Amino acid sequence: MNIYVGNLSFDATENDVETAFGEYGDVKSVNVIKDRDTGRSRGFGFVEMRDREAGLEAISGIDQKSICGRDVTVNEAKPREERSNGGGGRW
Image (cartoon, rainbow, N blue to C red; front, side, top):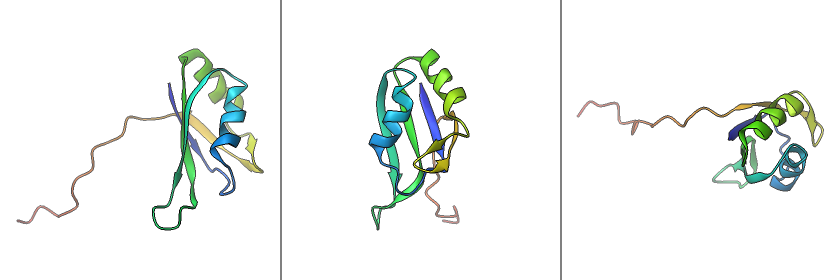
């Protein structure tokens, strides 16, 4: 199960997030999204849990709770939408 984690502290590491979610089950992966230019956290990320039931428990247990001093928003991640190339389609 893929989970979106928003409002992360810019100081939160993937290890911090994994520790919080690990209390609810087996964490398959954690990806804190970073700015391409600065390498700094963008304040959100994704957690993949091996088990859907554990993922649902983590969502209800962690949503609006603090990770590294900030209350996070947690919900099931939506499938990624395809981006257009941004060219405006005029040609």
